[in-house]
Image (tube, rainbow, N blue to C red; front, side, top):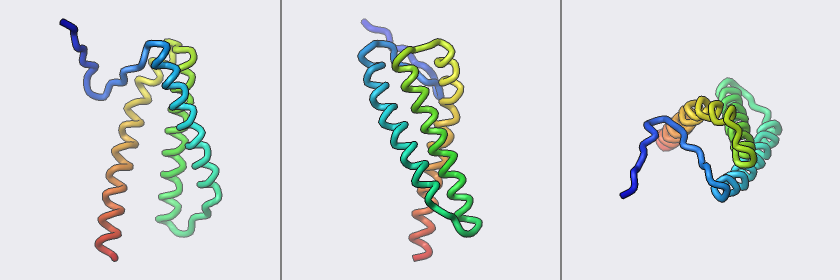
Length: 117
């Protein structure tokens, strides 16, 4: 009988085997490249007005956060240093919070669009 361990709510469980870490490296490198692309596209946008400046600022912060988190995932996949494991454990809470903000913002923007239209 195998034991199932529960990491707890809000805790990041990192991959340990070589095969999983190679997959993580490829996934995170593609995700980091996409975040870099999105940041270059965000630089082309010249916001006008308070709301657009707010959305632009939030978007840039989100892309930077996910890009840095992905780069840390690449380093973890290649080398698996113990200091990075502690750093990722702390950063995971922030990424979960950003996902929540994106979800709420998406729902509210769709509702705003449907009500104004």
